[in-house]
Image (tube, rainbow, N blue to C red; front, side, top):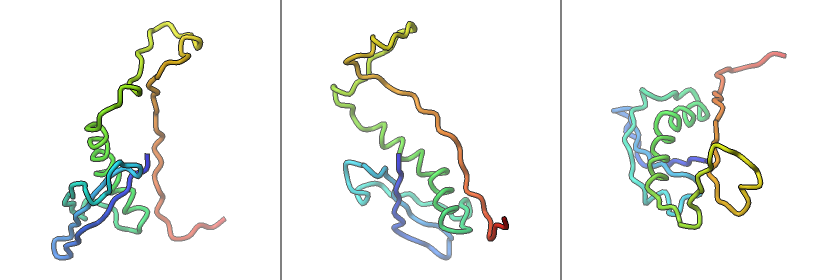
Length: 115
């Protein structure tokens, strides 16, 4: 899932931003989503990559998952429950929910690499 965000306001005095989040393949434009005030003190502002990573990890992922949970699943996409006994042939013509385990990767801060 690719999460996108849009900074709609920046308050330099308070060191805060107002941001809208949604997933890239959303059914509606990002401007139709609610904005959230976020304190920059909680984010890594070293560069763009660390900023966007910390923003999405700390706020965006949770908010986009809530947005996705509110969407209705069409009846054709409701997954079938699989019993403890597993046979590949039993999966034919069934909609099945897959489990995904993400690996955590973090950007490294560095100015120069010597090989």
